[in-house]
Image (cartoon, rainbow, N blue to C red; front, side, top):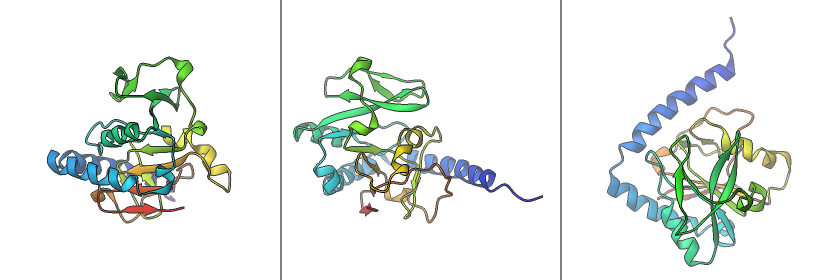
Length: 202
């Protein structure tokens, strides 16, 4: 009986998620902290970020590279920052500042306690900075498996010119692998930045 390619890809992604979660959680805190600061410095060297006025980022859970330095520097530079908020099976983005009250969502991810009327959609942002578990040189990103970023940004795959938002990820260099299994709905990244280098795809 022929093997279902989609089933093979699903199994491989599940294996990679387990492996990469363990590697990330085993990274010594001091090394992770230094890597985050270096990665954030590299982020600002990207023209798409240095020009951005409205930036969505994330707060780390489960050993993700810490985006807090990016938030602090963005505020110092007069930028407006947002955090993702799960609504249905997609994301919207809530304003985030130094004095924002936060609460964990059902996955334990911090979300701002701001009125729904203040949330914005992805199209209203200049850059979205996302976490990941693994990435490859083809601009593919392996997330936690919920598919929220892919569903939210699916519209980016339907046009020839990707103007806004730019989709960027930050990660540890150790999270790079040779090739990720791909699904048709995977939204590719414009750039991936690690503590060692920036990978630019557009």
